[in-house]
Image (tube, rainbow, N blue to C red; front, side):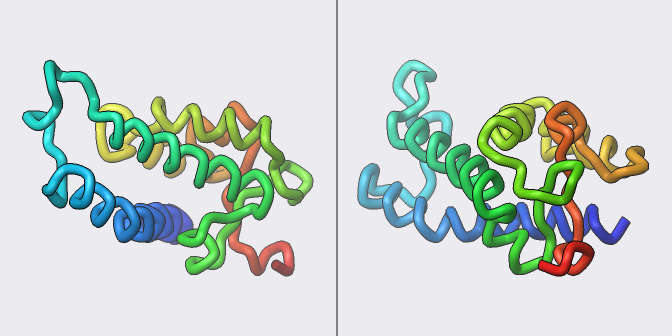
Length: 142
């Protein structure tokens, strides 16, 4: 159960870190700190929002693939590994992070939380499909 809290806190820290970067850019771009759905022309996402989504996806994908952690995970002393305890590489990271869309259903990552809690290995759907694991870094000496 403690690992679920650490994973959630790490995710929150990552989004806070990214927000420190995104909010000033949003303000510079639009004159508003937060762009809400009413600000989008004809319901089409603003280009800056699409750029931010790409940056968020790239951040998680490349950090977990090549370093094994995001800044939030590093602060909480957890990392993403494959079944042998190694870095997961780009293909597993892409799959794992694309499936965040499923784990995020219906909202607020509820499905992911339930799957982690019900999994003997603490895996959300994306972890199960990509055969990746989030573990305490001290378990592998890192």
